[in-house]
Amino acid sequence: MVYLKNLAEISKKNILFSGGKAANLGWLIKTGFNVPSGFVVGSPAFDLFLKQDNTGQKIKKLLKEINSKKIYDLIEKSKKIQKIILDLSIPDEIAKEVNGALIRWKNKKFAVRSSAISEDSKNHSWAGMLESYVDVPKNKIVGNIKKCWASYFSPRANMYRLQNKIDVDDILCAVIVQEMLKPETAGVCFTANPANGNQKELFIEAAHGVADKVVGGKTIPDSYVIDKISNKTISKKINGKKSIIDNKQIEEIADICGLIEKKAGAPQDIEWAFARRKFFILQTRPITTLTK
Image (cartoon, rainbow, N blue to C red; front, side):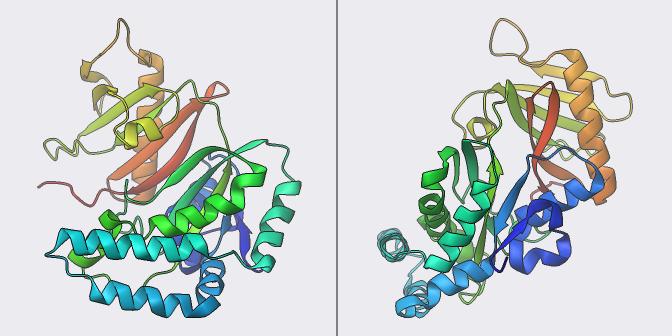
């Protein structure tokens, strides 16, 4: 396959093909962690897409023209770029490769997730800026891939690009297509407490359903602070009548995330889900905003 690779094939050496998020998922699989299976529509697919009608040059021109001091100009030009992408058809060779891969999958629903080339690195994190789509049926996958590409040029993403002086030539993005889990609970774990920078504590958030609810701020999660040495809960904030995850699950996800941090060699921001009676890791990235 030219434009696709299975997640299990991906390593951090493939980051220019797969983007940071997918590279980290491939690393997690190779390291032995549970990750929902799937494949990556690599950056060469987006590159081919951009070559149609000189689209790449049109986008770069608009990016260079954005006046970051005028919010209206930022929004207007971002919408123009997104419309250019959404109005353009995906080349047949890409669509055929994606649909050919989907035939081999028994799953009826998938998650479609953006993976920027400069994402989830030590210097840049596009967390919460790029779109992900859940419960996507097979016949909608190709359209949602295009939506993920367009999300890379939202007003918020473009502002981040400008503020961090990311080169306007760096506009390639990959997309992850994964089996859709039906999690009982999901959430995030920071392997250093983001509230105070304490690297001896883990901070866990949990909610019912998919992790996007927590990451996207669509629900108020339960939260837990864990001592990394003893693995005991230091404090918790429960919003309902009982804790969303029990003590055994708290200790298990704390163990898993602590091990990911150890293997990665740096504090991590991790998304997780509990389904089929076990924990799955949906994403890991270095914490780029840790206070001293």
